[in-house]
Image (cartoon, rainbow over all chains, first blue to last red; front, side, top):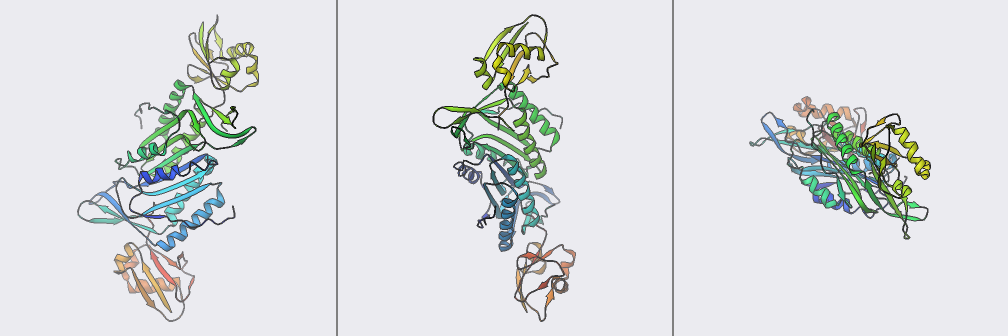
Length: 149
Length: 149
Length: 79
Length: 79
């Protein structure tokens, strides 16, 4: 596909709610060429660290660059895979343990494209989006900077 | 993991609603060892066929055998991948175009296991679950039996 | 030997019924049963189907125990 | 040459600031800038970081145009 897809708002303040996800799904039911949706959700784990258990992650980002990166990821995904729709949402600010900080929503006529695109997009975000996370540890205000592997 | 996972109800009557999906997601937010959810949704396409456009699929199944197959798929997925939770829902009866007939919900501490399990499970269902689909075509009551590829 | 035979999806249309009891003397393999059922319903010959014995897809060489549940399964369409 | 320099995540803690204007004569490469900034903030030496010039990760050999926006980026943690 040669057409440029316009940049979309990715960052949302705080956690992404299940209700927001439901509304996104519902809004794609009128697109009757879609046969498969692949959704990826990143949820904050209560990992045990020295000093206590993670209670949440405080996200910051180099927003202007991150928006460029998200736009490039979208363009690359549309070029590589047969997609009908693609939406990416990422939290900024505090996301408590158990809540969702990343929502990648890929829709395609066929399941293979949806699966492959979902995985591609999540890996690209993890590797290339300038987003930073401070894991809040224990009760005493300790923290630890997160690093993707 | 050696433990047996008890069989769960997979079949639901009619389409799977976005609200049901949201409730499933919300009910996993207390499981704080989950870091990644992969969700697959199968949606009915308005494919053009000889005689008109598909308006829905009427699903039937050999339910007893399908439940055995779903149970085996669950066991295989838990044995192969590091999963926290796994839920499969499939519609029976009429699912109109644009609505959801399959909901596979995989949760894991880590994204790779979630991605791989999601794809594995969907392929297993498509290939091995004795579920049959009558595509309703056009306005005149025509239909065509669907066949997975 | 009594078998409980089920026809699913398009096969129920072809045979005109969803299930029937099948009286049979002697032991059959799945292959024997396939020949008998296509003799009874010749329209089945043009159709793709698998045979499940007691809820398991079975090879033509497998024996069928008495009182088994047999199901004729057209191509799957789940998902 | 004026550069607008931003420090993200743990690097803002190390340098004690989120951004600063950096006055510099002559043209620098990214590698030159890396040496200057670690001279100014020696604590940066123990940290992993990438340098973005005008919102693009840049190699040490790349030249930096005047008026560029420079950002020091610690390991990414999105997702």
